[in-house]
Image 1: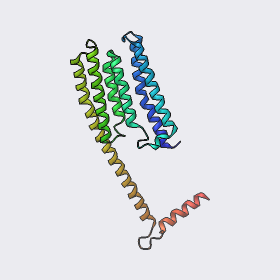
Image 2: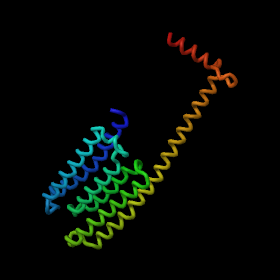
Image 3: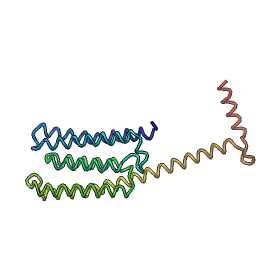
Image 4: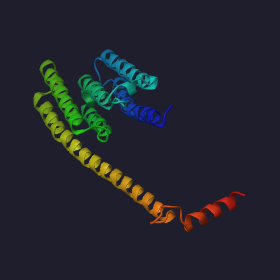
Length: 220
């Protein structure tokens, strides 16, 4: 019930909106006959739903605080991108939309991951994405032409590092602002201390006594 735990739960629920968007995109394609094998797609939707419930249940249990990353940020990003990449493979008409969802998922983690974590996520995303593209282009060359898939991978290989670089810069700016805020609060505390104490004796001065009397009078 701590504020940090509630914040993690809210953040997890917010990130699950991406799953819901992807599932709705897939369901729209199935409903309009754009996908030839809807049964596999329904298994994909079920798997995504089980993943969402499992992650949220684990966070809700409080066991996440036993881990180095209580927010499960990296795990959630890796899982989400893996599910969406599978959606990319099973839903050829939605490939462009799925690529946008992958980038959106990466944006969720730019403030919570360090450089090493971002590198792991980027390599995993590009590796799994490229592997799935290669497999689909070999098995279904008509729906997944190799030249187009290579172009799609090149686009992802360009966008993903740029997102990480921008995220790192924004994260550095956030840390800098937090440090400056801390320094400002310390300076205000020193000024307040100097205003209420005598420099020679370190005892409370007349200004402090006047404030104390005024506060006491208001309370009475």
